[in-house]
Image (cartoon, rainbow, N blue to C red):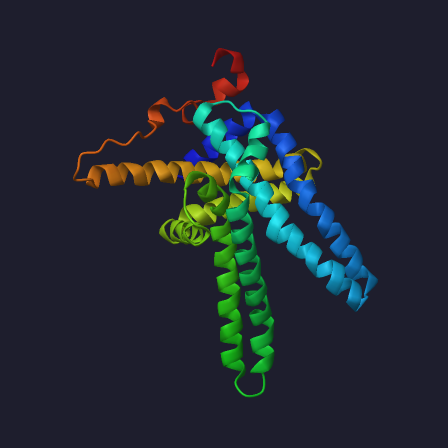
Length: 267
């Protein structure tokens, strides 16, 4: 599944590099603006500035801007996968369609991450004298929960644009996918981490594509998992209902090779 996800993501990015670079630049720059002001308030070391400017800017960046940009990117990539073509405006259509659910989930994840981060530092110190082992166990559990939160977050934007579900149900779907496919999830996380390292090592080309490639990987994995689960559901269905499931053998993104990379005009 991971190799097929990588293949689909590569060809989606290869075919639509121009649109995805523009979308990826927005994905990077829009959250960067409030984060910049948050950084200035922190560097000022003024408690009032950090409270009035720093915290709201961090919330705006990580709880609103980044989730919205990710949902727009996921919608654009979904259109590119489904129709083999799309317009840059599909990025903004995705934001317009799903902004309420996106912000709700973004705030849920941000609050959960803040609580877990605080727990990871607070409990080892709180129990340091009475029961240090208990404190470290609680802190370690908080760290593991933060890791799971980050891994499940990879599937949130694709789940938002592909499933007509509530915010709570969307979070549950992402968590269940993460639990049911641990090796795929860890593989995706490793690939995204490698892309992040390349983005820092070889700027500005990889920086301009980081958001697009990362979301293409997550969206491709979600698409292939959706096909797999739809096929299983149709085979188990007793009413004989036919479900339209894309055939991987006919999927252009999954059936190209190195020759198509060297001679794209012959594909």
